[in-house]
Image 1 (cartoon, one colour):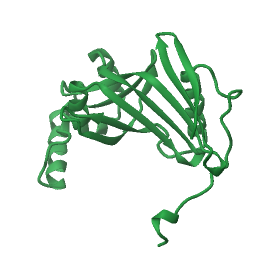
Image 2 (cartoon, one colour):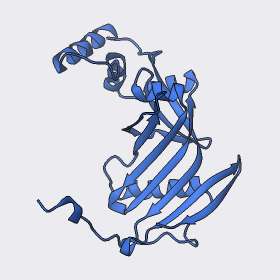
Image 3 (cartoon, one colour):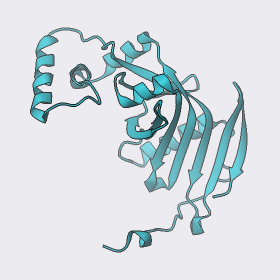
Length: 213
């Protein structure tokens, strides 16, 4: 294998310009998300979620975006997970959408808060049965002795809820992220990438800056 320092490629798929950039960051995000879906990218809604715990230690993981509603980015998780525990003590959060094939990235920085239980139940009921059962089965981020033990727990959960409507567990919920900044990045030739940063000035107005790459 060649040295890691020599692995690189040129970015040449296009530019993001002042003329092509939409003035509403949510409209720009929707456009790029639609492009990612249309391009057939695997897991176009996948995003890196970065949180920081009470000791200042950052953590990152991949989570699926489930909605953008009322100006908030939404995802769901076990409330006992590391990310949920982090957010319940430090609400600051960063999201990163890595659409490598399109040579695009979107970064969202803001604060997270819990969704109302009725929203959680509504989404939970829309999930496939196996996903509902898995939510009840897993004590996310806790240790378990083997995969066989996990599968045994899953079978026990199936038996418990056989023929019944499955409620959302109290230990499972959702977060909505209110962004303070949304950055759009388009790869450019010679590493002269196009970057535009939307910064929230108030509830209805964003300032826009072009950033140097």
